[in-house]
Length: 142
Image (cartoon, rainbow, N blue to C red; front, side):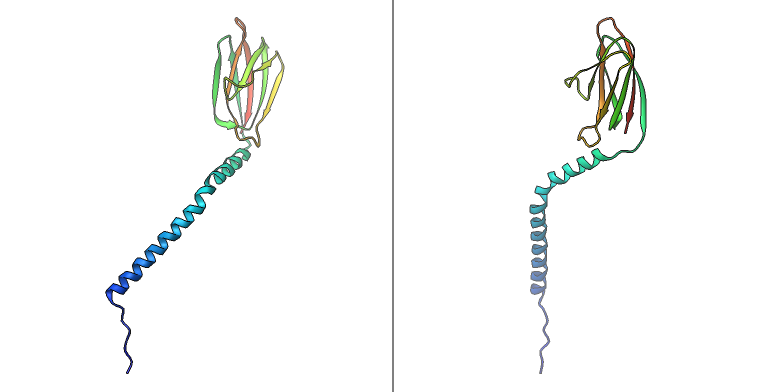
């Protein structure tokens, strides 16, 4: 005569508890190995984003005076073509007032290419010498 094996309620609860503990341990181990990879994944995403080029351009006319001014760009640019239409020399900085200053003579041009760089062009700072003015034409690509 065969006996039917029937699990007691205790055994069923114990099996369920063991399964939950195993799942929790698996999740903890996955987090233990994945969390150190997060900065690498974030850096890869930043690099990927910096490589994206939509193919649109945006044109702006800036009126430089002796007072420091700046524009903030809504869609950061991967490149910019800048022309000083005069009548005086202008000074430009890209992304920060503390960055390198570029003098731009009358009818001179500057070209900036940030394709592949982590920081795109998101701001332009500009001004002229005291009592001078300049009209600066800027064409940015994003």
